[in-house]
Length: 176
Image (cartoon, rainbow, N blue to C red):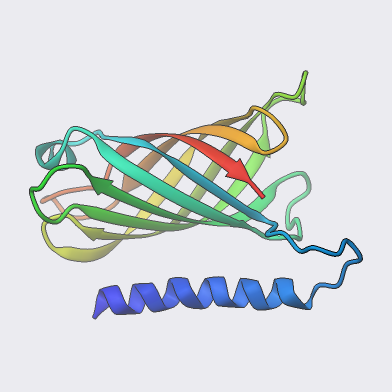
């Protein structure tokens, strides 16, 4: 039931953003997706729970960037991530959904700039049992060009004494 509810919430979020984008009028002719970032990379567990399942996890992520800046100079966005392992041990999926804030750490120099980000939200864990816990997501990133970026992301979750979702992800991404 939780998986269906989670999948419905993700579909609704993407549907609402598509409707909002469809109402925007421009004179460019072709319409390309905008305000989205996509990333993929490797994730390494920082606690024994994640390492007992697999030493290496795969991560995919998508960000929807709000077109309005709510804080001066800080980008607000919602991040959707999927962490999954590469072995056949069963279970082992984590879906962090966070409200994040991206802030510049340096000015753009020769096409490169660095930024930091921090966010909080819900982590939908399916490691040994399915549960939803509070979590934090933060890290640093480097813009490598107009559309390419790389990020180092730290995931920290609450949880009980049985396990936590604490991991470090290294991603390469593309901005639309």
